[in-house]
Length: 303
Image 1 (cartoon, rainbow, N blue to C red):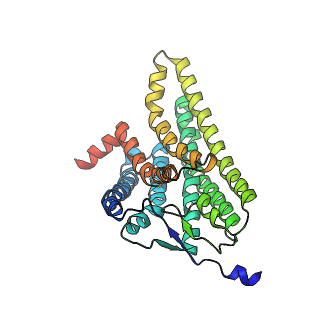
Image 2: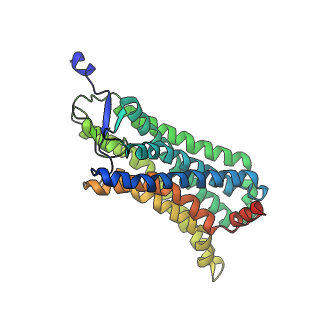
Image 3: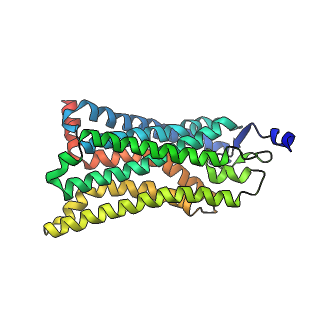
């Protein structure tokens, strides 16, 4: 038995987004462009917030961290995806595959908690404006961000620990463009039904808890502001629309992928592209296009 366990696969093969060589070559340019835009957009937001003293507030401190997480999340999968468009044999080592799983769940889990933190910040700013500066002081902001990183790390290591010692001795083709647990666990040479339930439960606890906290926060904000003024609803929506949009774009694909996994291959791949490639690009665009202070900071930078 020990001898058999030693004959594990040393690498996995990605099937990629499609089988057509012509289509893969066509997709190289748009995906490379999307990645460059994602990197430049998120780094620009981070550097702008650092450089402009008018943006040295808790909300923008959290936004800078969100942009940094999106930069990291995109960099885990997209560079490999784009270079694989030029290859017939899309392989990744076992260690590289496990590293992708660890990083995707680390940055993804951290972003979920960070979005909750941003919702809490908006709740304090709108519902308790007189106490905002004392509640959201610099030290508390740093601890909130550290907490998001710690929870993301604990989530990622718990996910990796459950699959790291699985015997992979047979099929090694991953029907995607990066290593993700639902697809990789199918390749294990053992019955993984119970393990899949445990892994899904792990992801479900984090995602569901964060999503419920977000719903409570934004509901409370809307109710509070509506009770204060006649046009409160529109003001609250104007303030929180960017946050709510980002939350929906991030959580919906995750829910479908991990909590309610579809069985249609192209849907799996579309969702994977959406939350690893598209969402990290949309986040900086959503915040900068709708935020007056960011726009003013850009004008000050230009002039």
